[in-house]
Figure 1 (cartoon, rainbow, N blue to C red):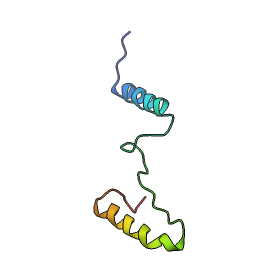
Figure 2: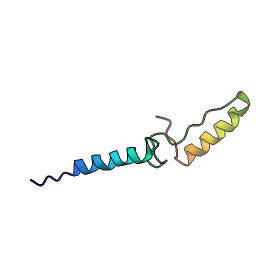
Figure 3: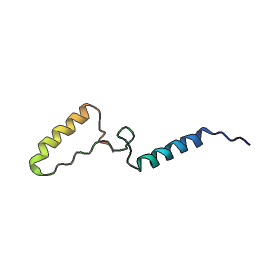
Figure 4: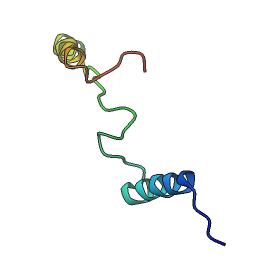
Length: 64
């Protein structure tokens, strides 16, 4: 019997990505691509500027 399913091939592709990258996905596939944590209060202004640049470039989504 020949069994062919698109869902199975997608499952195999995802399993291959997980195994190949060991759970550390490339940036284009990662669910979180940018994290902007301030290290200290002195760097909070620079952190805000970087966040604004990422938002204007539509790199980050604040909903996540």
